[in-house]
Each structure stands twice: as C-alpha cells, then as structure tokens.
Image (cartoon, rainbow, N blue to C red; front, side):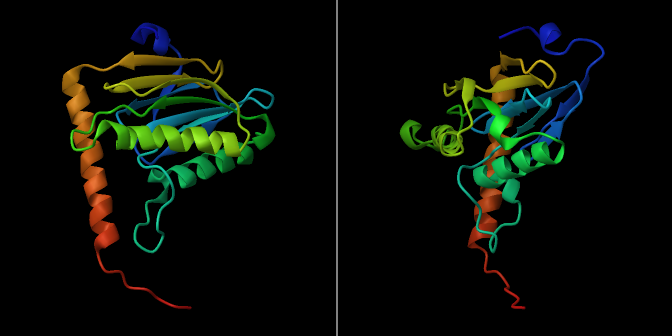
Length: 193
C-alpha cells in the first residue's frame, strides 16, 4: 500500500475504470477504480508490454436475453479484457494477474454468501481454469479500496477508503444490482430471425 503521491506520479495520465468497464493499453498510464464488493483483475503481459484492468460487479455470466450490460458480469468482463489485450498485441499465454476487491460492504448480504465472497471465488476459479498465474491479491475484508494500476511497471497501489465514501460506493453497487434484478425479472420481447 502506498500514498496517493506514490500512486499517481506527475506526468502519467490517469484512466478511471467504472463498474462494468475495462481498459487495456500499451502506454504508461495509471488505471484507477474504487472497489466495494466488486473485483478488478489487473492483467498484464510483460513480454509484449500490454496491460489492462476490468471492474466486475457480479460473478458468472449474464442472461443475454434479460440483461444487455454483460461486461458487469465476470466471464464477459474477463473475456472482453483479454480480447482487448490480445488485440493490442498481447498473448493470452503470457498473461499474469493481480486481483483486488471483493469486500463485504453490502449490508443486505450475509458474510458467507456475500457478493464480494462470490466475486473472489469466481475470479480465483477463472484464473485457475485459464492457467493465468495469480501474482498477488488484496481481497475480502469489510472495507472499500481505491486501486491504482501502473501499466508500465505492473505495480498496484491500494488505499483503504474512508467510511463516508464506502457508503457511497455501496449505494452505487446496490443501485446497479437492483437495476439488474428489475431488468432480469421484466418480461422481454424476443425476435426470431
């Protein structure tokens, strides 16, 4: 863990990765996000010098007939990030991972079956199945994190967030979860081609 000054040195651009987003690059930037129960995978290929990060809201995969924001879901978020890294010249075989988040911050969930716990289990299982080495992680706990991923050095700085912001992040996550649940349960029109 470092200070904000360590996390973002002068001269580097900062790119914010929001819930459901991902970003990959060959440039030296700092990818930054705030994580409550969400998880982020910081993937990098040190051979071809490509790196990226995603921000996963929920584990697993989406029902494409009920909800179209698939990159909020683990499998889609991981595949989209990996595809973008390979599109920029990286190799899936050379990828390494650092994982962050998965805190127990949503009041409605029980600790053993919280979204954070399920997200951590998902990302760990995914990386094992895909043979992507997990180099380091900072997951779990009952706090929110702000992370800063340097795409040129592959260092990640983690900062615990004050309680006030923790509640704002939790509220945003709960609102998105509610929106997803409403869309999933809403009757859908299906077109056949």
